[in-house]
Image 1 (cartoon, rainbow, N blue to C red):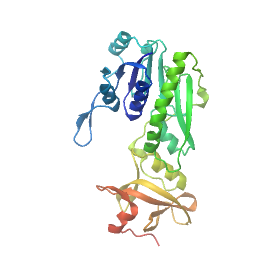
Image 2 (cartoon, rainbow, N blue to C red):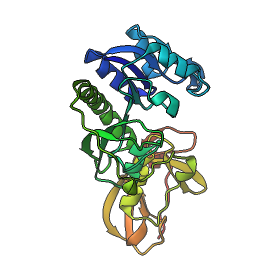
Image 3 (tube, rainbow, N blue to C red):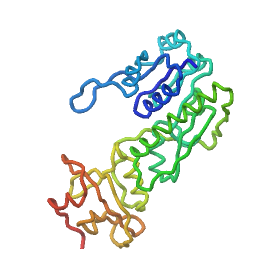
Length: 307
């Protein structure tokens, strides 16, 4: 089955690798244009481009899919199917019907829950116990296409969005291959989504970083995990803003106001949280510093607790 693959980050590269290893003909790859990266701002290839070049697959990097050029290019390739995984571009309606079997997509949620650009992060932020992946046909409306297959996985209590992404990478490739084989064999199901059950997963922003200590300890933990690796949860101590990367529950109670420092020592920094409970911050990054255990930071920077 002649395939065009569209994707950009590591999770997409994992899916492309699975498609190649499964023996499908990948006629072309579309990925985002090269961008400056890291402190040196050197131009970097996307993980998908690097993999495609390793396998001698033609790579196209249009700035936009609109305007007709990308559509003409896709028509000239004449694929049987187009597979999209975290490409970062909306597919124009005029392109959707070009491949014989249409466009399919792997979305990182159990649709119709969490349509949008940050489904993994919102599943963690909202404290969901499970999440997963859905393969679907692409439709004009965002993430609204008919569903094909799903796979589900539990979310660890302290699992970060970044860690969950890493676990979903190989699962995404397996699901894409299963979907393509099902379509090729004519056995793939097609289930319309129930739009009344749809929820959105919008992009994250730095404005979400500050921890709201009036929330419950679990809500705060999920806030920390959901914003890791970006934009990272933050807290303020003595006027300085720290990034927060880890926290643990305690069995302590307090009558202090949320956000009050209860203790600071070998286990970390204990804060009053909502509901009269406390939470222990165990990993942090001081302004201009490195990520470290809170206990290590306290050895050189003691913090006084409220008496």
